[in-house]
Image (cartoon, rainbow, N blue to C red; front, side, top):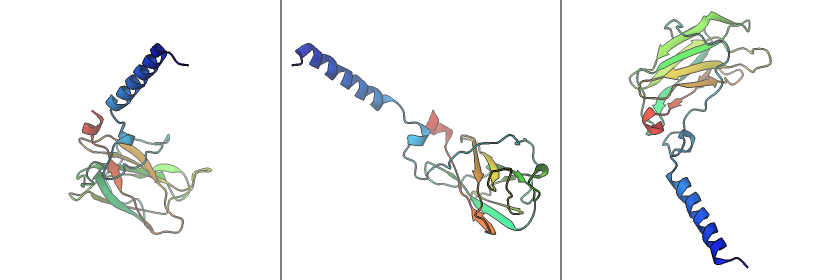
Length: 163
């Protein structure tokens, strides 16, 4: 049989645990967002800042989407979208880097050749997205084999959510 003191201690510990859980702020992943934030992915070893401003590094594949706020799905204008990928021969190089900005309605587009494999990795396009008032985000777009285009919305988390 449990004594009164043991019951009191257990109930007290339970109440402290509940209070701690309820008073701990939610992490960004646990926030009740209107739009689910884009899943982050590895940057990889080949990122270099300062890619030229351009929307194209080739032809045959169109990547497009909208940069949005996770809080209310509103468009994020003037977001900087940096992209880098392997060339048709499967190697990274300066000619396959680009920087572009989202339009006033948050949309962006990028044309390239079909993404190629790199070693054992499936074809992908690296992306780094920054915008004033939002957490920087790194992700990758994985084109569907044989598709001539792909839509990939980039949903950012506002800094105010993390404060």
